[in-house]
Image 1 (cartoon, rainbow, N blue to C red):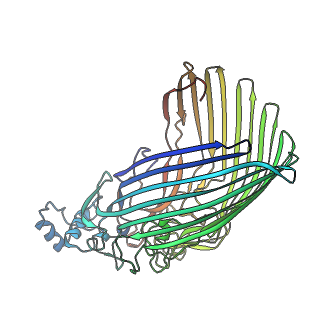
Image 2: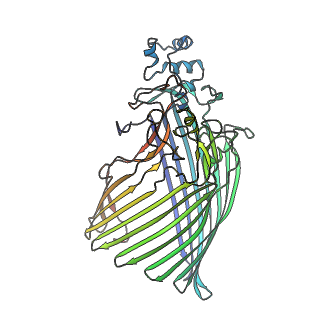
Image 3: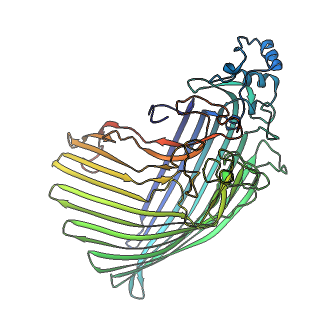
Length: 574
């Protein structure tokens, strides 16, 4: 569909409204030549609302025949008329809607018969915090020593709500709503369970931290650093839809604490050569949403369709890095290697009920790689390059939902196009993370007040979400798309002219050649054919199977911008 019309949308409406504000205050005070106090305080609000028309995946394997006698009677009583002529032609109209209307009026499971759904979400988040630290310069065992110690407090409140309204798809891919909702009643039952997509949750997170770092310099060549940070985080969830004690309740209280150490050493054999090595640990507590969908007894259809919340362990990352940095005549360079291993990483995994799942601690994932950089100056020209090779992989065995993956267990056993699972093996690549990234940049001073700059960004391909086992192989019938987002190269240009000591004119062109690329990909079921027509039960008489495709997130097209900047205060001070 992107190949046919790059500016098209999949379904509509697709609206997101964001509003954010931030206040930040930083202060520092030199007590004397060896002591310095510094602090920071902030307050931030983030409000977001979405209104999206989507396909109802639960209706993709349903027949969309025209209304039967009871449904026609309900529609006539409600004032609807003009039914299509009965027969095969009417039963296969590209965008049928009479059956959805009839089911909504009769209250007979419209969630399984309406091929569209309008989803609404809203979130309101407030964050605030403060931190302070003391830096002290002195000597230890006759060597220069610097000690930094401090504490921090961070807190956030979030309110999240979600609802849905069933409807039918129109020819231009918009969704028209009907009087049926995902409230557990008016949407009927799907696979024996009430169709209920509502969420009304508030969460409160508070984190207290204490940290310290000490760096000892030995003869100005060796620098040894030891550091540590202790965090304690409390998370309280409150569910306004389900009472405490209800198995579906999201309410709960959790606490996570950990001390994370770090150590590093650098060696400067010459003023222009530096070698370094380091080890560090870090951790993060689960989010309110992850805790809200972690119960194997109450699996979720989607990660944000939450259910009961037993505790999850916090994620712990252990990182090792080694590298060298150097400088020469008009040139700087660096080379480094790193390896970061996550223990108890949190992943959304499949449940025995096909298509459902929950968050769980995964075991291990690993990200390791090499970073190379080079920059230099040739008269008025500055040049540079940065290259990263990154291997991001799973390191534990797990089973996850793979319904849109051609290698899922259902497809292997002779039921392609139906719900199934895939097995992740150690070494499988983590989706959405490219292996190679290259950035080239240059700027040229035409005159003291006129500067030109250019950059090129190259990114390699990455597996799509849903292709965690890297085994997706489309067959062109049940499974479409490659299961990867392709690599791409984007070029950018810029210029700046200083009109006066205070005024500066800046122009920028991003994606100069208007390259068509995709920034991400995901596997999923689709109800459309290649021409954009909705098709119900595309594999008759195999009516349980639906078509699956690779969804792409289109990259930004060419963007031209210009700005005028004015510097207050003393000219040249900023």
